[in-house]
Image (cartoon, rainbow, N blue to C red):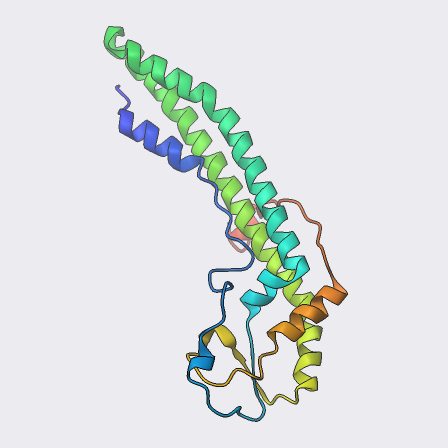
Length: 208
């Protein structure tokens, strides 16, 4: 059995592409251009950008840096595992024409199994990174909640909106900066390692 070149190369390239989405999220870089529309402040209506809180707070920055370190470590580990597999695949492709049909089938099947195992390991590492990110964001959110509540009360808010979903208007009742300062005073860093994947039974709700 001949293993197609593009299948092996593409699968290996995809398998080592571990990704880690920064804690700050996609919309944390800038607030909506609400001041371009202006208008009067609406009494009791306040806004908050959770993404900006994660991006600008000290603990959020520390978490992003740590997640990046964990992703880099995982990529390095997978890269080291991939090198001998790449070598064996290239050797097989070079000598395939000189092998008997049975030899090609046997060696090709063995390489295919190794590739599938490698892909599975890469997928699991990526899942662990994303699970870790979600739990870290949850922890930071829990720490920020009383700070948000205090700021909400101080500004006499009656309604809190997601700033990142506001298309325009007066943004003078934006609590984001206040919450970032309060969170910084409370917490500046956070320690964590990669979360283990849940057991298959637990992931399936314990169903047999």
